[in-house]
Image (cartoon, rainbow, N blue to C red; front, side, top):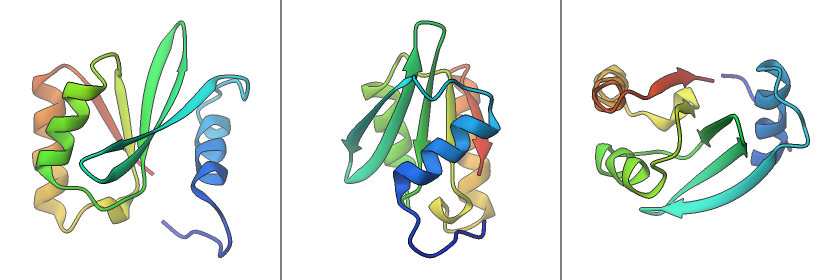
Length: 103
């Protein structure tokens, strides 16, 4: 993912909302889970978690526990150390019937 200098996390969250045809009026809240910032986009029909920080599998498990209402998780490529972490994260989320996408 190429990110233009000076863009904030909220700029990126807004871009994700636009690219996914989500209304810009949806509520956005920031959560800190295991030291990782997670932005929750929500309205009565859906809940999406967005993360741009480096994560661990323990952080993913904690996200599931603390945000049980989330159906889709969107992670930046840079969140993961390697492809194995991506695959393991996908499997953890899949086991809990959650979707994962990369940004």
